[in-house]
Length: 155
Image (tube, rainbow, N blue to C red; front, top):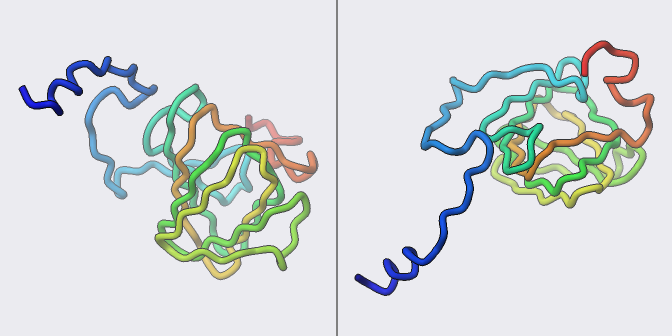
C-alpha cells in the first residue's frame, strides 16, 4: 500500500451535506428557475445543489432581468459568487449608490463576507450568477420597506 493510500485509509468519512449524498451531474437545461419571495418578482432563483434552507453547503443560481435592482441587503452567510453570464454590477453599502457599483464580467469570482450590506443592478442587461455558501440562506434588507416579502402573502 502506498503512503497516499495509507493516509486516505486513516481519514474518517465526513457526513454528506443535505442533498449531496449521491453523484450526479446537473445540466443547464435541467435547471428549474423559480420566483424567490425575497427578490423582486421578475428575478428567478434555481437550486443547483444542496438545500439552501438547511445547514450545509448549497449552490444556487440567480437570474436578474435587465434594469432590475436588488436594493441594499445582507446575508448572514459568507458567499462566493461566480458570474456565469452578463455583467454583474454590485456595490457595497447600506444605501443604493450607482457610483459605488463595480462591473464584473462572466468568469469573475466575488467573495462576499456574511453580514456585508450590498446591492445589485442589472444595469446593462440580464445577468446570471452562481452562489456557493453554507446554509441556511438568509436575506435581510437594510430598509424593511425594500423587502418584497413585506405586505406579500409569499414567504
